[in-house]
Image (cartoon, rainbow, N blue to C red):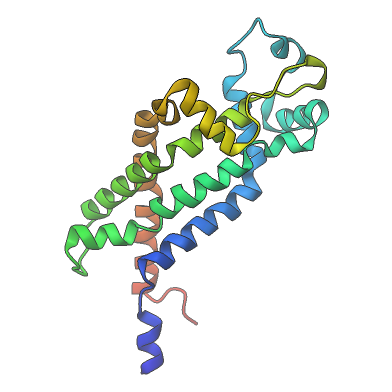
Length: 214
């Protein structure tokens, strides 16, 4: 009986926050080259008169990765990784780790959680995560978008992740670190609702009907 009670005890919020951030970092380590390829494809053609647009052409995800490795070296796929890990520890930890806490807040501790409460909690943590972690996202994308060709003679804009935070704040102002924050909040609020609420409902149904028990 005692072991059953302990098994049903929910971990404290700090454990959920740390676990969510750690899981996000592990996911980033695995998928970062794909994210970098996505950024390069998104910005391709923005500066058509530049040297880079004439010497580097990206076609598809795999083609982008192969081109980057051939022209910039394998390390280019992980440019901005430190900022990406900063982002996950501050973004995923809030977005996922505080979801249950927000549900309890809106229901005032009640066990009966409706779909609208789940959606509200998902929107809240999604928006909070972006508002908190946007500077890390800005720096990450800046590094990912920076093409480094040895023959081009382009000087690095930033000497490291911390230098990037400082430089952006100094040159563009503090607001520069939160560029794109509002559309990112709207996007992630919707994504968070879709992901976490769906996961939450499916998990609850599995537990309720003992679908995973032998």
